[in-house]
Picture 1 (cartoon, rainbow, N blue to C red):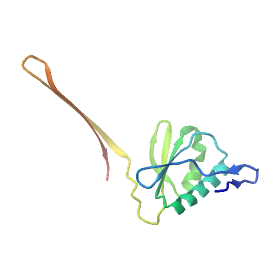
Picture 2: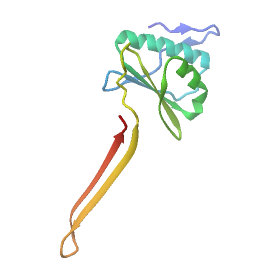
Picture 3: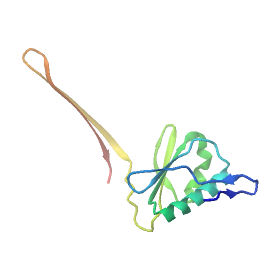
Picture 4: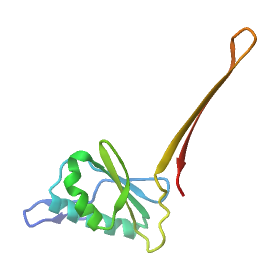
Length: 134
């Protein structure tokens, strides 16, 4: 697709994305962008993904690019989860109920070991489970 050219002469390209295993794409923003150029790039990218039949869009936004949050939300994205150094936003393209999973709400870990009569470990198990609220 031919890049768009903004009024300041800047070329506007699609956002770089990788496909996920569920018919969606993941965009991991890293470098600072002019907000107007980003907005145009996001709109163009969503249009392109819609034509490709992409369903869900995930944007991983580092804390350094927090100034772009409002533009992303105004395009219809919502917060999925946050970590100390990034915010994950999601968008559902089809005109159907979304199937984007909720974020995990609990992490449970279990460990056990069996000791024989000689005080030797004869069996050890570690188990971890992440629970999501449905």
